[in-house]
Amino acid sequence: MADSRTTDKETGMVTANEVLMKAYKSRFNEALPPNSENCSGFLKSLGQEMGFYVPNLRADGILAYLEMMTVNNNYVSLWQKLGVGKEGLSKAISYAQQGRLIIAATNSVDYGQSEGHVAVVLSKRIGPHNAPLIFGGSTIAGPRSPGTKTIRMVWNMRKLHVIHFFMHRTIYLGLYE
Image (spheres, rainbow, N blue to C red):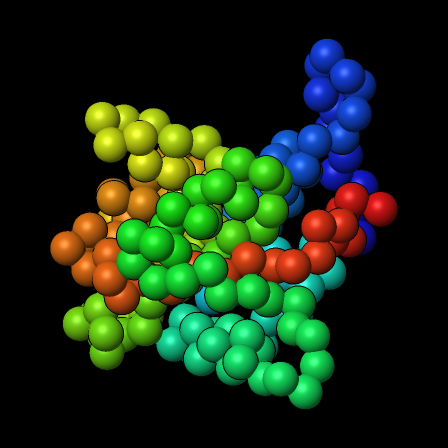
């Protein structure tokens, strides 16, 4: 695992958001075809770098896996469901600003597309709606974002009610060690 530590200029401490951003950038163009053209590939590659598991499935399957992991009462899951729609987005923004890894996901049926979509919610918010930036690949250019598009640019906000948000419970993923 690569050492991607960065430091806060004032405190000299490694900041979670900087570590996460460095990991996102390092995995975005990796693989053939590049992860920038594959939302699930980007997330799986990110998991390999940061030390969390993502099954070898497409976006619909990854969403189903995350749902299953958050309702299984036989063990403590590493994933926590934050909610769906506005409530989930509000929690996602709050936790992303705390440096936590947040995944946004939709499945193809609920979203009305031929494929689902998974991406990472960033801590930075911009624009007139103060919307969070998103990092994730896509087979089409519209939803593809190297951390430069807001959630409103990646997903149709009329479909916000079908976007699920998950947080990795472990504050200290592999890159923090």
